Each structure stands twice: as structure tokens, then as C-alpha cells.
Image 1 (cartoon, rainbow, N blue to C red):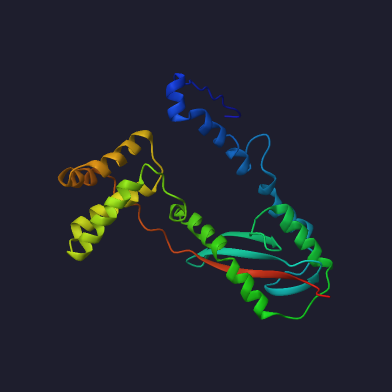
Image 2 (cartoon, rainbow, N blue to C red):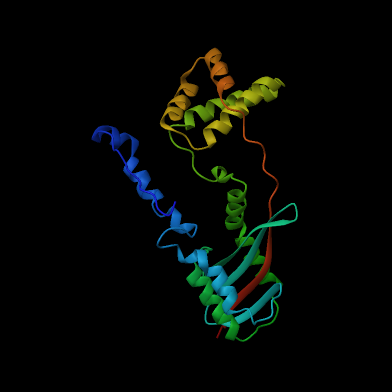
Length: 247
């Protein structure tokens, strides 16, 4: 269909305060634009192809280049690969001591400045420092590609008591070499780590408060853990390092 109408029926005010439907809808509203859909698609969706078109006459290559500039900065290109296939490619930029960002305006500015900046001598130590500082950003990208971002996101307060109890169960199962109990604990931990409906949050509360016998029964009714995704590795395909000229 060329268009679709979304009609929202809100519950009574006190229920809305608990469920937060309006807040969730507000958070979801910009999602179509972020993937290039809707009347106002996110500019970053087109940025990569526009950048490639603008600089397609320049020779392409891989490696690290050092450029003399007015400040310390860096821009890198990263590829995520799985079984030899490129899943995603993106650029990250950083100026000074600020964190790494995929902001197109900063990356574009640094690339433009590098094109006209004077080249400096190779500096393996500077590249090693840049690569080391990228670990957190690249780890987040790898986890996102494998659907495992929950590993670095804080767990909801409502799920922490159940998680603590299941970790104890897992530790006891390892010490007793109880494969069945360990599988149940793994199933429960995987359940707690993903997104939940309001009813599933209530179930997490029951996991924390149930008796040992009831806990085993509840864990047996949970869905099995998702299969492990194919391994993903990251590769830095290019880097430009800006080194401020010291007086």
C-alpha cells in the first residue's frame, strides 16, 4: 500500500502511566526515517553513497596515513565480516579526546581536511593507540551485528533479582556437573536478557520469588535460548590520523 493509517486507542490514564504507550510510540516514530523510509528519511542513510559519488575520482586504498593539522583527530573505516562475507562497513571519527562517533558531519569534515592536509611521517605508535581506543566502539558494533547488544546494556531493575538467583543455580550446577540444571539456568538467563512484554516482566518476578521446585517448573516452560549466531570479526580497512603540530 502507498500509505497506511495508524490509529491508537489509549487506555485509562493510570494504566497509561504504568505502560508508557505514548512514550514508546514517540521513541518509535523516527525509526522509518533511520532506514530510509517515510517523507523525511535520515540524511545518514544517503550519506555513504553521496560521499562515494563525490570522491569516486580519487584512488582507493587501504592502510594508515598521518596528516599534520591544527588538532589531534582521527577517522577510520571499519568492516564487519562473517565467514568471509562483509556484513557492514562504516566510518568513525574522533577529534581531540572526545569519544568515537559515526556522525556524518564530523567524518565528512575530517575526510575533506585530510584531502588537502600535508602528509606526515608514518607513526605506528599513533596507529596502535588509535586502534586500542576503538575497542569499545567496535565491540558494540560486533554485538549489534550478532544481536547481542544486551551484553553491554544494563539489565532492568525488575530482572536483577531473578538473574542473581539463576547465576547461583548455574554455579551449583557446574560444581555438581548437573547438565540438566545448567541448561535450565541458561534458558532462564537468556530469557531475562532479551526484551519483554509486561507479562514476561511479571514472570521474571516469579522466577526470583518461586520455591526451588516451582522455579524448575517455570524454567522448563521458557523458550529455549536463541541459537548462537555466526562469528563476526571486525577489520580496520583504513585510518587517517591527524597530528597537531607542536611548537
